[in-house]
Amino acid sequence: MPLSFSRSLDGSLKTLANTPAGLPVRLSYDVWHARNEHSRVRSWSNSLGIPPLEISRWRPPKGPDETLYLLGNGESVELLSDVAWERIGQGFSIGINAWPIHDFVPDAYAFEPFDPESIDYVKLFSHVLHEARIETARPRLLLFRPHRSLDAERYLKIPAKLRKRSRLYGRVVPSTNRSGELAREIHSLHQLIRARFISDSLVVDLGGTVIRLISLGIQMGFKRIVLVGVDLNGGSYFWQRNASYLERRGLGSFTTGFHRPVHETMIRGDKSFIAYEVIEALHNTFGRTGGSLTVAHSSSSLADFLPIEEWGSPVS
Image (cartoon, rainbow, N blue to C red; front, side, top):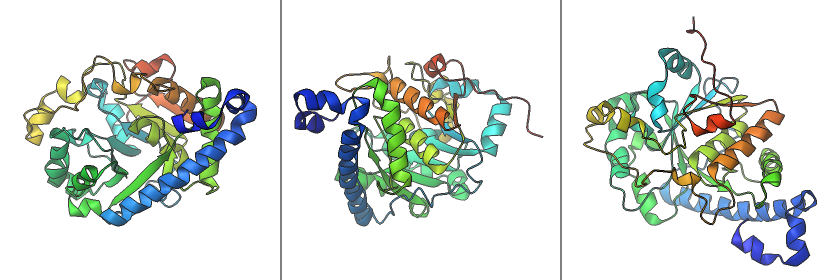
């Protein structure tokens, strides 16, 4: 739970807040936090001239009945069959962070502020996104609101044509620190966003773009979400497994700024939850409403609890 919330409670009240009966207390804090976050999104929106996301209006052109494919950067991307890529092309897809290195141009890209020392990520905005294959496809862009002025300056390196198709968004963070309460609180937050008690420029988050985009997909009404290249197993990135991607982008190398043996979102540190646990909670709450969250390949560590996508036969 956020430190400020934890410090604001003591003794028996703090214990009560992390029980099922304490959900209203936690949600009250979450709504307060969300209002402050919405103000940050609006402030950065005015500064950058990039509108805030409105989930209720952000309908994919193929309709919410299609499957949402979230395209991560793990090496399992290179293990997908032609049939899998055919199906991904039939659905609605969002490429995450370094995805522009890949040849496949999705319906949207999602970026978050990155390491201030990273020069390689700057190249995505100042070079790779200017390629004709991307400018012609005119994907939408989802930009997580800046943390600092440097992040805003980097967003302004995105080609003007794509900036017009960009939207800023923020996050609302569940305040529980107990795994047994997490799925329930996430479900409640999604209900509050739909009811507009919380701005629909915000999505649920606990530390990572993939988590935010799963929340976005649920909010947009998708019934199926497939995690592609979301390996979380400390393996290589797809461009490390196949260097031809870097060659085609004119990049000698590309580093994310993180040193794996373990994916950064899987390091607990002082966090209440690691990505593995949050995605499992999202899977549980999504499943209770008839949704399906699957993983594209068995090599992902998420295959420990997520069903593996069945790609089937070619689309006729």
